[in-house]
Image (cartoon, rainbow, N blue to C red; front, side, top):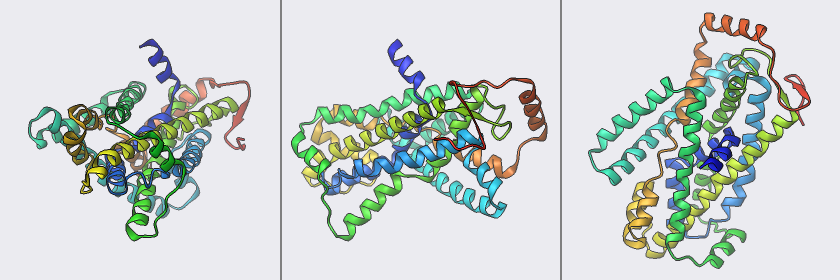
Amino acid sequence: MKALKRLLGKVGPGFVTGAADDDPSGIATYAQTGAIFGYAQLWLVWFTCPFMIVIQQMCGRIGMVTGKGLAGVILEHYSKKVLYLTVSLLVIANTINIGADLGAMASSAQMLLGLPDLFWHFLITGSIIALEIFVPYMTYSRILKYLALTLFSYVLAAFVIKLDWRVVFRATLIPHVEFSANYLLNIVAVLGTTISPYLFFWQASQEVEEEIVNGHISDMGIGEPMVTQQGVAESNWDTVGGMFFSQIIMFFIIVVTATTLHASGDITIQTASQAAEALRPLAGDLAYLLFAARDYRNWASCSSSTGRCVSVCCGRNDRTKGRARQEARQRPGVLRGDCNIYADRHVS
């Protein structure tokens, strides 16, 4: 347990962002991919991973170097019309995504524990709001790291069923492409759910939160952030690890559903909960339980990024700003590594 605590203490925003990428809508898409096409699109795992890593590293660096989230950076360099348009699109997309996440979590809780679906909706929503308001960032981020470990249930589910690993690895390493509408549309769906806009805002904002907690700046957008080569390297490796972790989970979801649902001809999967239900007669109760108990680590990734962006649009309390500036003047900077890199310099 101590080793696990040390490991989770070292991982940062990149790991949590990678775990948040495997949200219920993404899980449903990956389950559909395996159920409909079998192993044919497993090659997308390694194909999409570099895109995820590069985009999230860029967003993380923006947060580290500017001390602002993406909305704050957009406000600084573009007109308010561009900001309002960007954030409005994000809020709409996140609202839909949050609704899908809440529905999936309530459905999973009902499957495992019974009680009406509406009861779980209210309970989970109330719990999320309470955590967002009353739990400090460091505690909350630690909770998210532990909840991210529930994603390993998909890995365990793969070892409960019988697999021909030679076929699996062949399909993973050798791309199979079909020029049909359904095949190409599913590739677009996988790309869309894997590289999600809310993750861009989430990654940048979490990097800034880490800077605030570590005492490098007073608040988001308050003070001049200073980072080091070591800090950037740590952030890069954290992001690589998080995105790789996300893609490993995607790999096992597709493998499990392809081995069971596609092989049995059951390709009418619309949600991750339906995939869990369909697994029970094919792979047994254990695989069903492992596949069903999985949505409780994605409670607030969308809502956090949405809240940060809306706060930028609506402005912050002037008294809070003044107090933060005063604290920034009084407190010396805390730097990591040997070499300071200022916000107006390139980081390489």
